[in-house]
Image 1: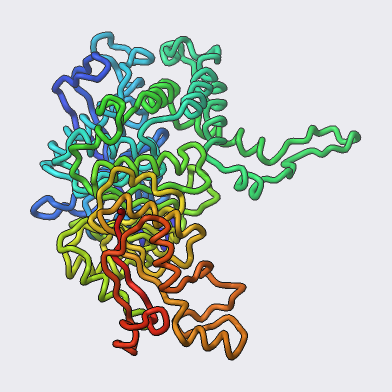
Image 2: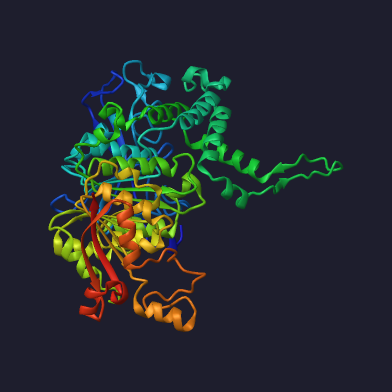
Length: 380
Length: 195
């Protein structure tokens, strides 16, 4: 961490915890006897509580969205490009709340937590949670923080889906909704990629039907493979060509050379896979991808998206990225169109970018300028 | 202002109406309509820089190509759909005109009149495609690919079964422009509707 990284950063932050003893009735019909959320907040809540903003994380995200955990931290939170003083989610104006979702593996109740009934880790027995369930837990967190309203609910990808769900589930709570690189529901192709990732995990002998903790093992191979597939879909073909081309990391095609050739892109994906294994849990990955697959905003309108949006009162910002093929611009446009048909206030922009789905996490001048400009209308 | 169509549009748009501004640019017109006519406005533009500029003005704006059919506005009912000074940049202006009279109770279309005497004289005397202060582009490098005259526009409306409800001509030669708009109007503003 250097002075320059701290200049427009929320600085050193510490996570907090909140325990919710009351039972949580999940969409699946199962019941969770209480749960715990780990979360971070940035900025100050104003006296009338009108400047609270909820940030929802995506598949592999967590509560650490901005700033650093210590002086020695080399990397800031996952959305540090967007959250901080003078940034689109300006912590000089807003009180930002970001929890780790239940089912996660970064401190909130999830598959690695102890199940009180059995005294063992939940493992694969952790109930399947949904986007709507996450919204319920986030609402309990809001009430715990004595909030009655969000100035904005914001997220990218799976986080954008949560923001959309908030706007239809609790219209009175949400004044502004930002869904970036998101969709009202996944396409068959998108579900297919998630299924390949899950099958990669299931096929690892260390998986032990999801109870690998008890077996003192970890399906690392399967997880790494799942991440490689996932990561590939977050990048655009052009970006990969730019970054890796056909360059070799080691070895050569010379038959005299003993060392096998390894492409840069192979090495990169292997690295991404192995990094992920060290910080993420396989059960969480399975559970999060299923929540993603099963989300369908139009179900509230019996399959009609416009109908589902009939009662929302939020104003919307919908952003897509031109090279994102995992959450294609057409899906965001579809979302914007449904909002227009439902006569809601919406702004939609497709940002020209070669960074694929990952663009929502990156520092793109047009993206950040639009986001900042739009946040100007969110009362704080 | 070179154009002289903006005041006419502001005057025509109904108070508190629902307005769609196609090719809204930086949102200046919509911003004025919101301030002066309290309209519920939506802008459409294809240029990302314009989207940001319009958002800075507090407007709702959707990035899309108005020539892609405007299917997403099917079933919408706008009190006014505006195309201000962008008819000449469209590839298929006639197709867009047909669409806008179906999604709006009324459409307001304004454009520079290429039949203005200065344009005619310039072409006649110089034998070169006219350039003006307001439209300074060379013929080979211009966004304005479909210029028309007042007479051309009215003929097209007739062909498309579009009714001209009202028209206003702007020019420094006020009376002349009313008498002989095709020759003296610098810009033309039309309120049109479906027959």
